[in-house]
Image 1 (cartoon, one colour):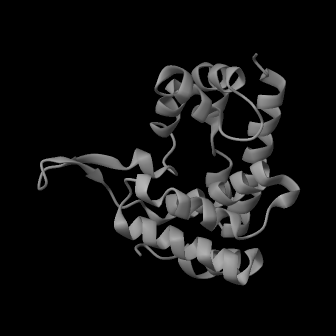
Image 2 (image 1 turned 135 degrees about the horizontal axis):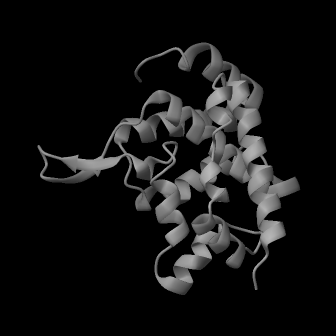
Length: 179
């Protein structure tokens, strides 16, 4: 059964949380564009159809169809997803992960923290995002340096808290060209 209003409320609540995080991280204007593709028909209709309120509707769509049309659309339009950053490597002669620009790694961090907050609700702790990251380690195809940076930020969040982590990102990391 489709749940368009619940799905709309969830994606909007998540998006607004990401925007708040992006402003705290010093990339507020980038955050304003976060996940706008979720409101397009291919993503929204499938999201509403597979919505259950406890996880991404893409997971249920994959179980039903064998793939997620909404995810394929989403990852191809949103540069804060590491899956966007895969390209043919002429040296390896195969597709391989590409190192993400730092501003998109920061947005990815904001996105992961916000998603944990939305899905965990009142049970959220600053350790949830790193725990989720670690559970998926063997399934990811991500550039090693991008993975290491994201992991270090998620561990900093767990160990030192949100305020210190966002301050570090805003004052130190955001101004770097490389990592």
